Amino acid sequence: MNTLHKAIILAVFFAVISAAAALSYAAPWTDITWRRTVLGAGSFGCFGFLLGGIYAFDPESDLKIKSSAIGRMSFGVIASLILSALWRWPLEGIALASLIGAVLGYFGMIWAKFADF
Image (cartoon, rainbow, N blue to C red):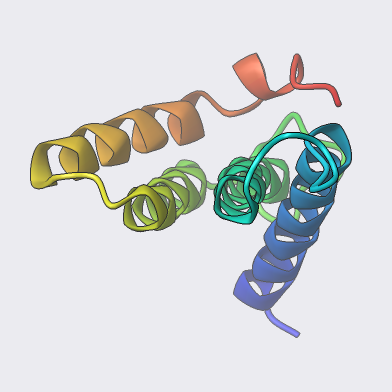
């Protein structure tokens, strides 16, 4: 199994855990619609995908597969593009989200170590 496969598996694992955390906080039996629940879970899943990519490619991470700033930035952009598609943002929103995702991916564990569910 090569490095990219391991990183994708780790990122998807983080995405599933984050989406499950979102569902546990905003469960369908509360006063929200199913559509809002799915959008919330998907948004947290994108955040988890970003965190998984950071943990896979950051040199300070205990789960590091390979140290790569380009890998972290790529996962940040992919997570933001999925989030943009999920919320159907206009082109300007997609561009801004991609930029923010790349910056968050680049800085990696500097901010990700403070993300705690």
